[in-house]
Image (cartoon, rainbow, N blue to C red):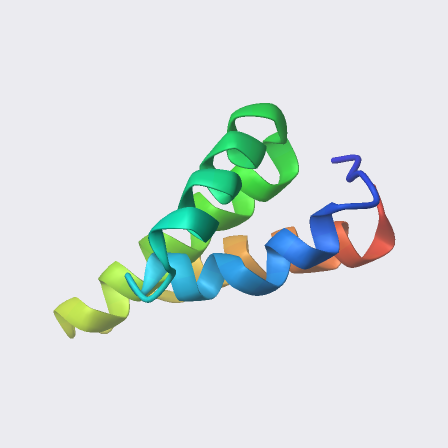
Length: 79
């Protein structure tokens, strides 16, 4: 999973976006980036799944958490 140099800025705001706390102008920019960047898109999807699982209180979030961890490791390694 290769990342571009601009991903680090988006990586930091994806959490705000998944919480619905990102201003509209920033959201538009982020969505444009997610359309182009598979790494950030996968991270955003994984984080959304994890947050949804945690919010449901189901107690079976290990798969989603593992996916987020994998995405973070790959992102930080630049792969």
